[in-house]
Amino acid sequence: METIKKFDRRAFTSIALLISAIILPLSILMRHWPVFENSKQAKHLFTSVHATSGLFFTLLLVVHLILNRKALKKYFVKDSRSIAQKNVFAAVAIVIFIIVILSSWELIIQ
Image (tube, rainbow, N blue to C red; front, side, top):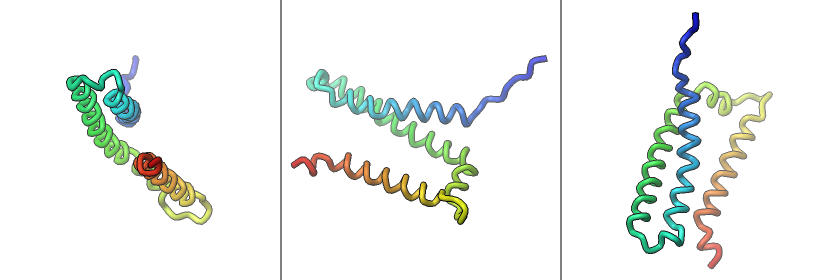
């Protein structure tokens, strides 16, 4: 007899999160693509796609955090035998640095 596998919520959430993470930058690039410069319809379409995928990404991120809370907790728990805190600190610092640089690039160039 063949057993029926349960729906894997963690796998679904991870794949959906990845797909929405890919769509987010692509949609904003298409929104600012010179080919669509004079097309209000295309700009509206890509803006809508970007906003919708951003909302979907945010919701999936929350679900992903809930489904993986045990594993994530291990990264933040203080353990003197582990370098987890250094990894967490480095990840947060690098992400914040990249966001600040990329979001203020126009101010830096001027």
